Length: 307
Image (cartoon, rainbow, N blue to C red):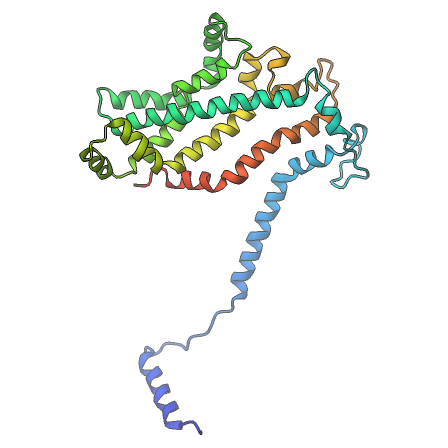
């Protein structure tokens, strides 16, 4: 079947009518410039990521080197692999390293439960309850975020010493039960304010008080904010060194960060290989917590404050 030349003429005339007078014919842009920019951007991001990961990669590689070769051979490809650093580091201190990991886990568990319960209750009060001086107390709570720990650590130590809580886990766990982390309170307040109040009114029509409203309405809808609080609490408490060093002075009460410090003695000598190996072991829980909680972490931060 031969094409109709008249149809082509009519089509070209229609295109000419649709195109504005004096307009140049359209030219398709080449996709190569945009692809080049994308390749350069990704190459830069990969280079920046490798630069940030280099210390961690060097730590991991050095944990498999003999101690005498760690600083003489700085390459990321070890000439020989030595796994004795892990076995030596596990039993190098006064107690097995599992004891210090267990101490850290107990403190993290108590802090995690304390922050989730107390901070969410305080946030619910600021976001949903009407009481005298609410704005004033909320402002005071926000100002407490600016207080560095070095300002309050001495009064805390005096108080906990009089309560005979030194060398126990109580100074590190009990404050979490009293909603002392203002950052998490503010995070949850912003999230609670984004939940429509129509849900509260409908629940009250069904006979719900503040207790059921908090437990059955607010908490299930606030899982992203709760997950963000849990992940940050886990990472910050597990990596905490200063507070644990102040309140825990007995070797059997040491946590993983404080135990790693004991690999370096007072003369400056250090068992670098075992210390690096136990550092990798200590980083594994933090890495796994961030790996599996990254989705909830991003979601919680992105949705906080959106109304």
